[in-house]
Length: 202
Image 1 (cartoon, rainbow, N blue to C red):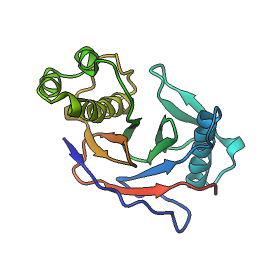
Image 2 (cartoon, rainbow, N blue to C red; image 1 turned 90 degrees about the vertical axis):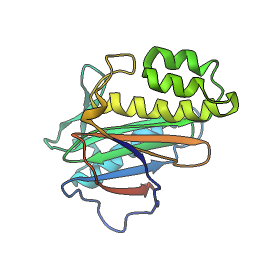
Image 3 (tube, rainbow, N blue to C red; image 1 turned 90 degrees about the horizontal axis):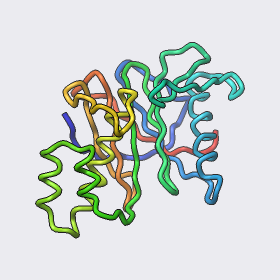
C-alpha cells in the first residue's frame, strides 16, 4: 500500500515521545556549504537525544551490513532513518516499526527511464515510458524515493534484491518546492500516527 499524505509542519511544544504506532518526521535545513552532511548528522543526534533524554556522547550509531544505521547504545527499541539531498534533510523516528525515508531534489538526470529499467518494476517503467518527457522526471523522482524508502526500511541497498511491497506501507509527500520524499514502514500499517516537525537546535 502506498498513498500520498499532506504534512502540516510544526515545531514540537514539548519533549518528543513515541506512542505505539507513532511515526515522527523531522525536516532539517542543514548549514549551507561543504559541511551540509555533517550538519544533518549533528541534527540527527540532537533529535535522537531529545527522545532518549541522554547526551550526544551516550549515543553510539552503528550500521547493519546493508548500511542501515541503528543505535548500538543506549539499549533501546528506537528506530530511525536519515536522508539528505542538497539543502534539505529528513529524519524518520519510530519505536515499533522498521522504517526507511528518502528525499530527493529536482535536478537534471540523463535518461531516467534507462535508470528506472535497472531497479524499478515493469509496471513503473511502462508508466514512465508513457509519460510526456516534461512530466517524466517528476514522476521518476517520486518513484525513486518510494524505492529508496522501501529498500532502506528493510536494510537493503537500492540495487539489492527488491523489498516486497506487500510487507510495507508507504507514504509520499512534498517537503518543499521541487522536493520529493517517501516514508516506508514495515509491517504494513493502514493508519499510522504521523507527525511532521521542523527541526531547530534544541
